[in-house]
Image 1 (cartoon, one colour):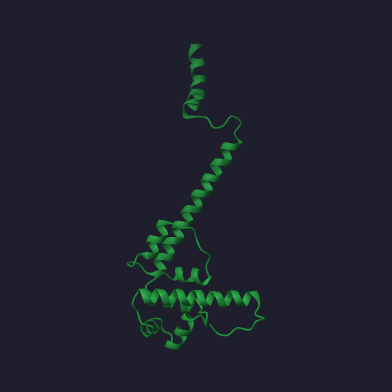
Image 2 (cartoon, helix red, strand yellow; image 1 turned 60 degrees about the vertical axis):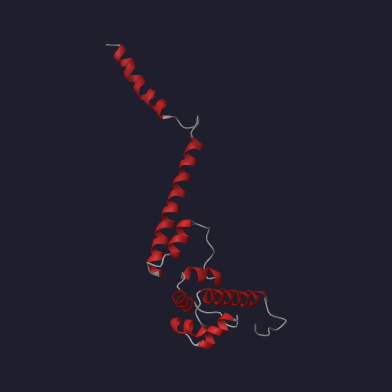
Length: 163
C-alpha cells in the first residue's frame, strides 16, 4: 500500500482499507480463474498499470470499472460491489447463490431475477407479519375450520327445528 500520513482520518482509512480489500479479492479471483493481469485488463477495458494499482490497493475502482472487471472474471458484479462496500451484504440464500453462479444468463438478467425473488420474499414476510398481528388481536385466538362451520351451521339447525 502507499505510504499514508499518520494523521489520516478514520474515513480515509476505511476507503483505503476497502480499496485494498477489493484489490486483493480481485487478484485472488483472477488467479483462481487462471487469467493474467494483462488478459483481465484487456477484458475489462482498463490499462495494465491501473488494474495493477487496483489489485495492490492503491486505487479504488468505480462501480463501472468493477462491473467490467466482474464481466472479465465471469463473476457477478454484485459480488464485487459487496466486497468494495458499494452494496451491503445480504443474508445467505441458496437461490441467490445459484442465480449469481449461473453462466447461462447475463448480469442484467441475474439482477432482474434477484429483484423479483426479493420482492416475493418481502411480500411473504409482510403476509406472515399481518397474519401474526391478526392472530394476536383476536380475543380467543383463531377459530379452527370446524368451529367456523359449526357457528355457521348452528342457526340453520335451530330454524329447521321450528318447522
